[in-house]
Image (tube, rainbow, N blue to C red; front, side):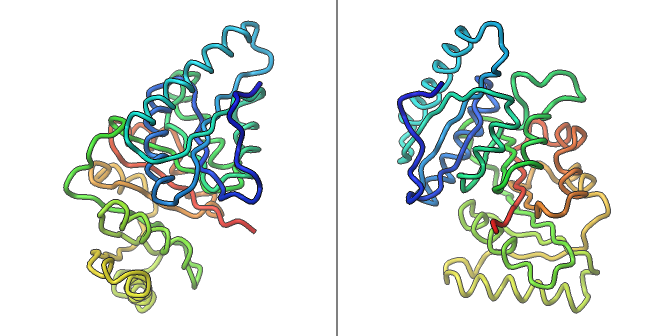
Length: 278
């Protein structure tokens, strides 16, 4: 099943894809994604997945169409200048969204879905997609669809020991500029070590290279804690975005764990699992 709107052609900019399931969490993710789409000047593709073996498939299809129409209408009324495409697809939600990620620039999901139940399953779809997708995945925590962020905002880039972490640092700079936020880089090395100083210098160099207006972004470099969730528990109310590389499976597992979801519940601290395309 598919709605009349069709996805972008292969020659078009890769869209940002949002998983829609009728929940308020998906709606908030759609607004987060729409703002990203505006900044990137790319379309927004909303996908509702209907499980193929659902005995009430006709009723679910109507529900899906209504949910997509509601989100689209709300986005259009918001004043955000973004092209919205919609699809209703059949299959297992994780498999379908992972497949859709192959032609997406970014996948966005609410941290909790309508079919997640119980503390052990909250965010299970988002967690599985974050690990299976072929593009970067944002797991969105947001109090309200368009609530203005607080005055103290940080984009946290969690680094591993690779010598040239340009992709994650550039993404942190992009997001900090978009959000008028500061950057906190967490490194595997002591704060005053030569390698941490090198990271600090690299960020400053990228800022100067990118845009003189970004040169004033505050940059802080600190040692990465063994368990990043401890840091999030202390600062989730000021962190706007936590970015990690997808090829650090232990860290990704920490960030999409139900314990982390519980810590971030009711905050505006979203997670971005950054995946470099081959």
